[in-house]
Image (cartoon, rainbow, N blue to C red; front, side, top):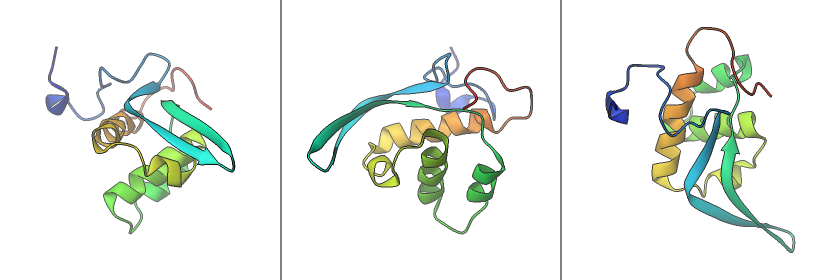
Amino acid sequence: MIPQADLPPGARPDFLLPDNSYQLLYPVTYQVGEERHLLERLQLRRMTGAEKIMAEGPESHTERTINIIASMTSQMKIVLAKIDWVDLDRLDECLGFFTMHGPATGVTS
């Protein structure tokens, strides 16, 4: 197994599941009104031009990463901002997989 940090650009990380989902190492609890929610998994998809524009924007790398994940998953940015730093770094690696040119596979929306 290749250590994740040594993967070639665009390689699929081991922690990106076959259905293009990512299981958080540190689940996030959040509340909407009186209802509490637990975010344990994010379903990712191929990126669109909208996410490419975000990736090229003037924000910090972390802000861009959260904006792209919010667009891909329909999760609220305020919830994604609570994701553990390690999970966020791993999700950023997953995004690298989706930027490679080639046929779309798996979940697309």
